[in-house]
Image (cartoon, rainbow, N blue to C red; front, side, top):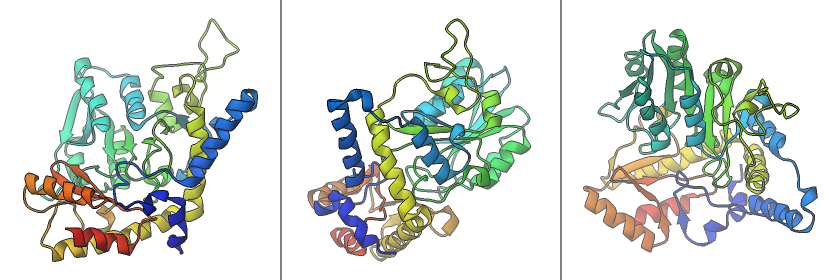
Length: 368
């Protein structure tokens, strides 16, 4: 596949080496054009603004499985996790099991449940920065109501075995929730094949949207057990004014008006993902990260990301060149050379996407 043809869709490639897609994928020209089209209509004839709610849901189900009615539109990953955590009918003695030291959006909503008497069981990564299914299984019992995980850890890029974790959760009668922010759009993922009950994700990273966009996938089993916590005009049948008649599908988790301009623009990003193909994107980032891994090992850098098992790899690599101070100094040097990466947990984090190329990877390695 000719990935070079897509570089012009990402103007950031003209201004340096952008290897920080795990933080935010740069705005592409197609999304920007669709945003400007929406703004033009909003300026000239606001009554003609396009309706986008169903279009986004349909695009998401096309990419990740389920049906459009399984998807609620939310503004962030944390919003989706928060809805699930707050909406479950927790009882004394219930517990939730999740990996420790996940992203704050995948941690804070669960930690708050301690105030409601829920046992929040955190499973730390092993010495190789991995969270193995058997470690999760050891903390699951017949009082576990939800098993939650990120599909890919934000700080090391470790990719969870979602199918195995879903089987662990379901064998205990628990729901399985996944934060997909560092996986959807860059790693093939199907909610039904993986056994995911709840999948939440924002649109501004690998899904080629902008901040303020996102979704919560909730299958019928999840909808039976997760109550809406912030119902607004789009959560229920508005023919009723004195009674609350929730929609039977995932729309019940929606609230009021969202940033329609951003969601309308996002449809162009979702279309681009379908055009390129997420499986093709995944293969491409593995090629680029292979090159980075080889280069870092030649440079004697300390890789923190588990990379020996292909199924545990993602588009994220974390490494150290010695100490926190040395890593900070390297980050500043790279930034000065217009090579954009990130610092997470004191380590350098690098995350290429399909618009990056080998020359950029080599420039990054030469700078180190």
